[in-house]
Structure formats: C-alpha cells, structure tokens
Length: 376
Image (cartoon, rainbow, N blue to C red; front, side, top):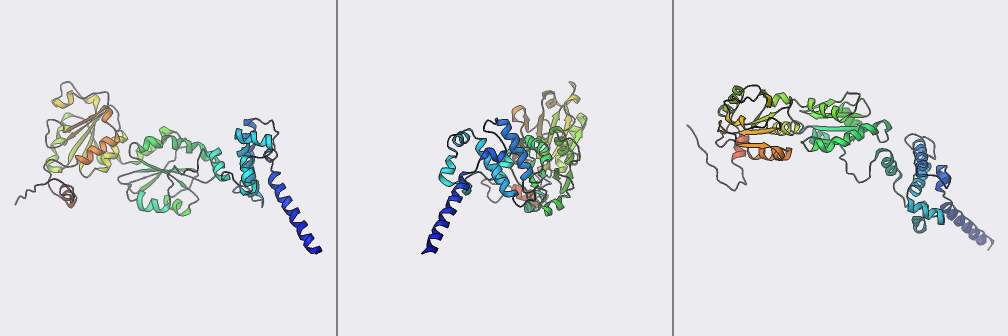
C-alpha cells in the first residue's frame, strides 16, 4: 500500500516538473534580453547566439538543444503577435495547444538560413546533385551552358556572392543559360567539378568546367565570365564587308544551311542570339555584322532599311536578295528567336545529306505531305 502511494506521489511530482519545464521557457532570458528590448536588439542577440551555438560550429553536447531554444525564442520575439501573447499570458497560442516541448515551431535550421541567407524552405532554387550533373547538365552542355554556384550549408562569407548570383539568375535564364546551386560538401560532385574554393562559381560548357577566378563577385564580372566560357567564334563568324555578307548568303547551295545575320552596334553578339546559334549550329550558319559598317552606298538593298541603333537579325534561305525573316525591336527575344530557328532550320529545298536532315524533313507524325526528289 505504501509503495502505491510513493508511485502516485512520484508520478505527480514528475508531471509537475514536466509542466513547469514547458511553461518556464522564457524567450527573453534565452536571448539574454530585457522585456523592453527593441527589434534591432532582438535581431542582434539572435545573430550572435545562433552563430555561437550552431551545431556545425559548436561541439558541446548541448549545442543542438541551445540552438533549438534560441530559434524558438527568436520566433516568438520577432513576431509582434506572438510576443504580445507571451508578454500578456506568459505563453503563446502554440504553447496552449501543443506545449513547447512538442516543438510546434518552424524548423530551427530553416529559420537560421532564412535569417542569414534569405533562403526559404519552399525549395524554389534548383539544387544540383551528381546524378543531374552527369546525366543532364554535362552531356547537354554543348547546347545549353550552365552556371552553378557552390557553397556549404552555413558559409557566412558566401552570403554576398550568393545574393549577386541569385540577382542575375533570371537574366541568364531568359537568354537560355541554365543555373543552379550545389553543396560543396557533396564530395563526389565537387570532385567532378574540381572545386578548390568556397564559395565556387562554375560554367559547364562544351563538356568542360570553367572556374570563376575573379576576386570581385559582381553581376557584370559573372556575365563576362559566362560569355568567355562559350566558344562563340566557333559558330558565329564576324563579317566586315558587303562582299562577306554576299558570300555567306550565297553559300546555302554548298552548305545546305540557312543563314542568320545579326546586325548590331556591339562588338560582341548578345547572348540571346548566341544560345540559339549554339543550339542550331548544325542547320543554321550564324554571323555578326557591325552596324557602323553599313554605308549609304551599299549595293545590298536590304541593308539600307536596317536600323543602326537596335539589334536586328536577318534570316536567309534560297533568296539572296531579301531576307526570309526580319527579327527586331520587341520581337528580338531569346524565346522568339529560338522558336523561329526551330521552325526555319531547313531550306525550302534542302538536300538530304544525313539522317538528321532526313528525320527533320520526313517526320513520323507530320500532318503534311513531303515530296522527295531523287537525282540519279
């Protein structure tokens, strides 16, 4: 009988202690703050303590528990509504329903990344793994270059370069450059890429990996790095005279290829022209002509109507006197150019010189008839 009483008393004391532990959590004490602390003081305290107690940086046995408590405290005090509830009732709505020890809070590591690296747990960014690199990015890099940024989970000096990288991602995607991020702690992928620095920026182009070695991570420097990693001169020739243009557009008979001419005031072609030329290099011959070279006395009538200010693309097939298509102004986008190259990659009367050309002409699911002329 006495033993039963002791068991009951022990259970009551244990339950009381558990409840006390749940309700004794004080976010102000956890962050070392007074109840009058400002938002700035809360952020500063959180940043300092989260860095110190992060399990990747601190080997003490209680580091994970401390880190979790610090993030739970910050979640309460950084939210005006939760802070008010705690100040008035000593608890939050989550505590009332779940209790603190149920951790009805955000993942502390998600909070840490959001605070220090402006990341979310939504998975919006593209993460590159070894399989993706070996089976997609590398084998297709002759048609689609990739720029990838590597860092470790909690690399503080990676933050600014990462922000620069993410700020230009959409611009690169809009001209056909793939982008993604990878974890340098992925040893097999890092070995394949030849990574030696943290952070690291690489371009994968033409089956090769190029490393960004400039000390300044700026948008302009990164774009120039991408441009230099693509062997533009291999598939875009530079023309200097009217005769050069005539020679190119007359060559369709020998090359069996469509000709695309970019007229621009820039010394180098825009990437929104470069990538489609790269993708269709076997069927479309591309060239660049500087608009400053256009003369009023030009024998080529189609040049006289070309703007010397904005970029223009002329697409030629069999007719050497006028272009098949003129792409300029708002129509000159990567998407439009890619679609036009796709639908105009063959001459009107192409010569079947390979199975590739044959398959393009005689498509299995084509709804229209094609006529084949055989010359013996």
